[in-house]
Length: 517
Ligand code: GLU
Image (cartoon, rainbow, N blue to C red; front, side):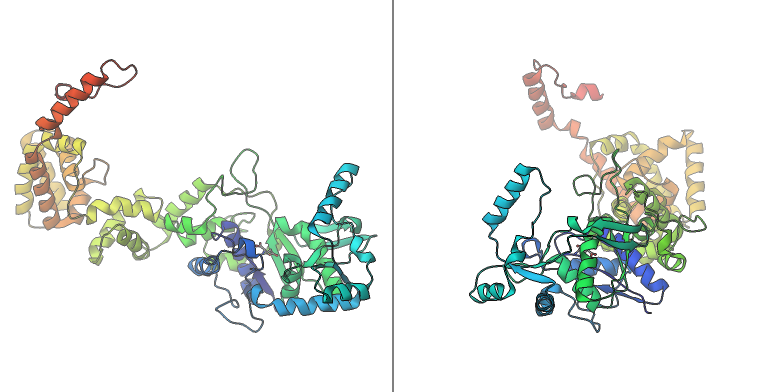
């Protein structure tokens, strides 16, 4: 038997991390057994349909490397793969169930159903459709339907006994049939419900293993009854644990508590490799306990029955930490550089000097957890002009004499490598008899605009002669332009503001020029 798995997302919004999780496990199971992995779009809920969602699901799967073997836009022998294009299939199948007596047309209006619900509430009985439509005989149903009376089609579920299915992860799950109501299969607008379309498609698409989220466990007995009504063998079921918020109650992950959008993680610069590795550790661990492993390793080791059900937590800190390890330890430098380029472009830089880019990424990757952070830190490497803020200008001014000397020294330096730069700086501070830090700080600020940056030697070496000298020049110019404090306009404005707020309690007095000394 060829294993065929599927994901069946509804295109209702942002591609969800839960979808990526279920996709990963379905993909791995199919690959492990040399089978196929199908994408089916369950788009029969018109009210919640979002036009861009399908394209974005496909993109996200491609980004993760979980490309389906069959699906919309991909092809396959069992299409179409969008449920909205299969309405005839569902209607034909409903006809079959009507003919065999497993289903019936029900004509209750919404007012009538509401009255039934209120009555049930008043009597304290379990809510749900009470099967009243069953009593209308088949000929009468046909006549009323033919006359255009609005109706739905419902499954006639058994009143006695139990329905049981075997879940690969949970064992036997059994429900009294009395609790399974006559579910709607076809809505009054002619669209199928999730239950009907899902079962019909899983069967027609040859799905052998339905591996999906825990929330569908409660629907499965109804699905099993549908398989029985069609006289089909049901697939193997396995319901994966729900991912949990990292809160005290470990509630099911939700947008309100956590970012659940795969695109958002991608846009923050989480690597697909890291996200996959992270999701693969949700309810699963490598038999040898390895924490870092590739998709290929996962597929090789994957055993569905080893999935554990103890509420895996979507811990963002752990994801970021894992991502950092992929940036630093796992991916080759060139690959990280490739991945960072779109982020740099988005920030308006054109990283066309390959060697420079590699040097920048090399020095920054130990300092960033995501690609976006790496790109943000790389900003000063690629900027044409450094924007010096007040604080930076103050520090530059304090080191003006050193900067003037170093401009001269660096322009004379023949070899621009780490050793030469290091020697130059050490010789210089020795001659000047000043502590190294006093010289390095203004230089670091001149080169980057910030005091938080990698080692100055690395900065000078990576920037090279042209950029280093240009930046020291810019810094000296910024000193010439003067500190904002020297601006008489501003001083006057500050003094006025200070006078105005002098009486106001709890407000901080704006610093005057004198404070700043
Ligand atoms: N359309 C359902 C969903 O959005 C599919 C559930 C299933 O896998 O059966 O999750």
